[in-house]
Image 1: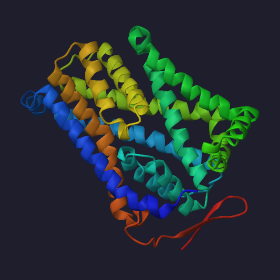
Image 2: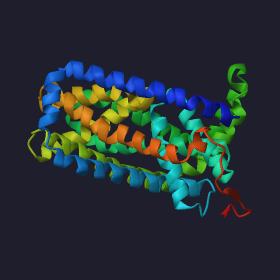
Image 3: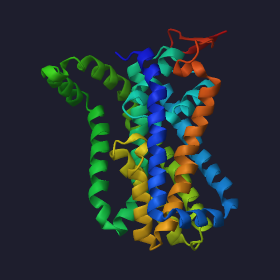
Length: 342
């Protein structure tokens, strides 16, 4: 069982650690690209493009929120107010840069407090989000991998792992036999009840129809961020060609995969190195331009999202244990419809 208070007590120190780590990564990137040259690139960047980049990021967040809210319905949270759902969704952005598993646990806890849904079901939604996003960026990466076969190994490895999770979850006898086998192993026996609850919560999320809808939404949403990255490259002086666009989408999508499999908070370090390295290799641009493009896209995506989440935290301090909750009580009736009582 996941305890809410310990998770809340740990969130701020872990967030601070993630932010410091992110700052060090940004500093290292600037040193690699030569701070003076990177500064010049930033100064001469066509900043009129940046609001459009942020709009494409918001487009990504909007479609991913639709998927999040759809998933809540699948685990039995019906008629849940959109503003409450959006608040929880955006509040989860800063959790991306927290080390450890506190992020996943805390979103499950928030859902439990808001809707009385089992924490395991909330965590299952988080996992389903990540897996569907992973499959979506793999779809966007596919054409680039075909052109650049050096990336095949990482591509296929991630594809097989994510596909296996989805397929096994839908073959109940196989999934249950794996859980029963785990119950016989002393080291993991005590975790089996939690794994069983988690599996039951995730079963409906990985059904074929739900997976197709989620991956479809994810593909379109991440394409939006890829277009935003293309605008950044154009703002740095690259030619506005279809090749630049396709490489921008491929680089951002594949670096998202690399960041995810690195297990580092927010993919920090791994994603930045991947973006900069692939830009240098595929577009034959200088280190300073590649580093500047990497910094700008990470500010416009990861750190923009973290900032939005922190704004939600500022207006909802009870979510991270800084204030006793005075919000409306939420319960689920026998039909699993949410009722809000003031």
